[in-house]
Image 1 (cartoon, rainbow, N blue to C red):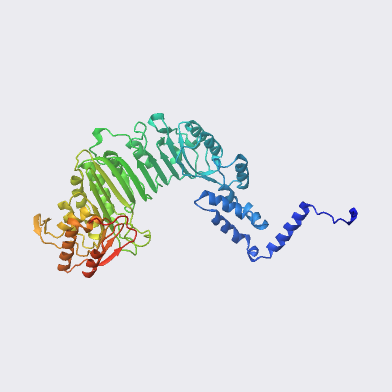
Image 2 (cartoon, rainbow, N blue to C red):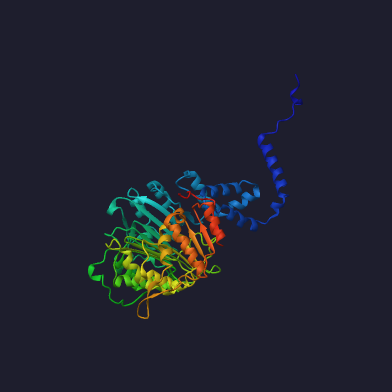
Amino acid sequence: MPRAHNVPPIISASKRTSRDLESRRRYNSRLPVSKLFPDLLEPLFILASIDPDEQWASLTALSISQVCHSWRFIALSLPILWANLVDFEERSKSWNIEMLRRSDTYPIDLSRRDFVPRAENIISKELDHLARLRTYRVMFDSTSQETLIDKLSNEAPQLVHLDLSYIGTSAGGRLEFPSSLLGDDAPLLRQLELTRCTLDLTSPVLINLSTLSIRNVNMAMAPTLSQWIGALRRMPGLTTLSIQDSFAPLPQSLFHPSPSKSSVELPCLSELYLDGHISNVALLLRDLAFPMNCGMMLSCTEVVPGPLFEIVRDAFSQRINHAQPLNHHNIYSLFIYAKGTSLSISNEPNEYETTGRLPKGPNPYLYLDLHSASNPNGWAELLPPLLSAMDDTFSKVSSLELQLPAIPPALMFSLSKAIRLTTLMNLSGAMSKKLLAVLQKPYPLPLNGGIEIVPIFLLPALHTILFTEDSSMWGPAYRVFQSFLRWRRNGDAPLKRIVFRKCSVLRDTMERLEWDGVEVDYDSQGVRWQTM
């Protein structure tokens, strides 16, 4: 048996690990990446940790901090990495205590998109740190409303964005916050979004807002028109205003508007969303003064021809006539949809108009949605006065999409002004049969103070039609289309391009078009075959 003093000494695990770590640090310090200055690494770490997917953001920050000693030192010196990892719903108490410690006093963003109400105990834990919150978005119900109201009565010195969405049973499923929201002291608050809940519009926290959005408030507690006007006078810095289904009903006596005494000046407004009864939408529009290049989405119910409709029509037509084509694309789009009591008009570019994403240009997004009171064919009495106010629009439009039950004379008069129209978009089989047939006929147009039959060659610049239905290429619709091709060719204005999207066309049909000198463009992602 060997003697004990001949046995090699055992090196403790702690010493071996310490020695190994020191060796690794010396090795890492000689690598090229280790020679980068912390000032260069810090912004890279921050950028790497900013990810829409919260799980990946968490993994990235933790991974960076465990690469090596120097990277961990840098990561621990960046509070923003750890502020992003505070999570009271999915993480433990000890985790959040550590993340709050590492993030020091850096503002916290708790802005998850919830699809179910957040638990009362989670809301309580989150709002215990209201003084550090920069963004807070929460969906809640009646079980947590008292906690939420109580916690939100405290000051929020760093809060910039607050989004509250209520699902509950009180007051018909809506909730009204007291005027003491955020302790009347939220100096940085710029964005406030409320869904199915509202607050006292005289609250001081509203004064510095740039975005205000209130949606789906019970009419029993919704602000009146005069309250809205008074509140907006105190918010001159608004850039986005959204009031959707959140007006108290107006008495019938106010349905006939009188001239406004003074306008509400909103010089910075760039986006306006109004949704409600025609009386509220029209009278608020009448009292607002905002830039001509402001984007606007208006949705009105109970619409009938008259003074209120004219206010809405004029506000919309002035702006859509003022809009310009998008930069570098020379695209001026127009979409008109009508069915039954509904009529919609917008200038949103169609997804098929360009191969890539359209750049932002001077053209604001404009959308008008009208629902007539009771006339089952209400669109037919609302469309003509709208078209008559949009002459400048039709003189500039280059891309047009129509989805209408019929082709009224007023539309033909507008199309006679569309001398720059190059593309008909998303032409359905039904619209193809109606529109292409009437375009080939002399049409009664109001000229020289009367109605005259004038053989005007409409749409002289038209060279492209985009179809999205198989039915356009068979039966009566196809025969009308063939007749239209011949008519255009005989008029020295032949169509140059036919596009098929999300539909399939027989090979011989495409070959016949190509023999006629028409370029055929189609995708291979068709979802249905042509019916024979």
